[in-house]
Length: 119
Length: 109
Image (cartoon, rainbow over all chains, first blue to last red):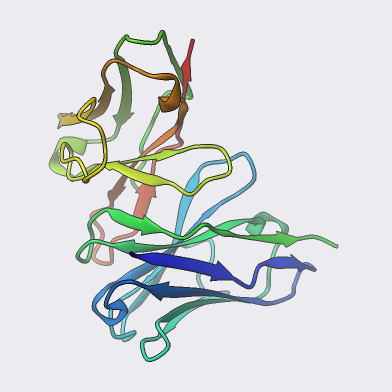
């Protein structure tokens, strides 16, 4: 059974940092591109970032470029999102998601982890 | 950047057919994926590549895509179909970004 379990969310002050993790199981993690998608409270889904299967290529939404870094450890079957210089508008539930192929549908999602940026 | 437009809400009586639209410039040339999200839960893929259905998704869910509009159709709507629905595509840039519609709240009357 495919499972994606996020962790690392919490309350952080503006300007602070946080690292999210997504532990994957039930599939060959190293074969899949992975993504982060976020959802502000009461709002819609927003794509944040993606990483290719071996971690050599990454991409970011303009809203997080230069502040967030996506990475992965295929030996540990874990995806990460390092978030720096956090702003109030980064407050959201962050989901990790597996994608079919390179630019296909998100076929599996984690349960999400809440990040709250507030003083 | 590419924009997807969905109606904020759609209401339908049980047993009837719900149609949720997703508008975008020449969206018919893109592959559209649809997600269902119930309160407090992660999104679930219900239609992919315009009209394919993942295993476990009822046949009542179908999709189409042509011109400037993609449509998710839910036949014989049930109370359990009440949820938010999002369409999604990849934009056409050299390094594609994911794009989601704003979401549609389906209310079963």
